[in-house]
Length: 174
Image (cartoon, rainbow, N blue to C red):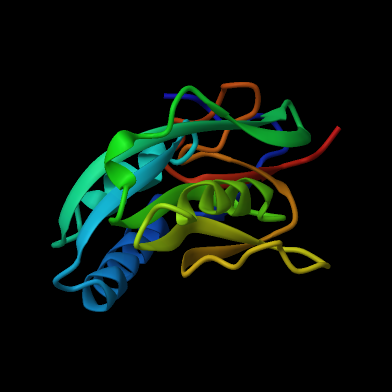
């Protein structure tokens, strides 16, 4: 397992994240009871969140994956889907699961891409950053609220490192 870099500040412990996942699962189960749902995990950062959440859900759910690239190091760019979208989204309810919502660029991009051919699109994020300006989209389900810092752990990375940390940390920006 990785070790947080020097200067990293613990924001959310592993146990706090586990409790948050339990709460989100109950809320989603109640809201989507009886629905046939496709869980759409945003790779790579959303993988730990999606796995942890899906194991707790009691829905009739299938899991699919999509890769959307946006960040290079600490700098964000325009989102783009890497590879094809899953084929079984047509006419289905979809729950998009991602690790973090900051400006909402990636989440809005993906929701816009699939909402024209799906029945209903829901969004769930583990962390929503508190920014001075509102995001382009609000998530339907938010686990935790974090300050506007660069986050690592629980799927969030810095150049591919620190995704495996069980807790979430803020790191100083260069």
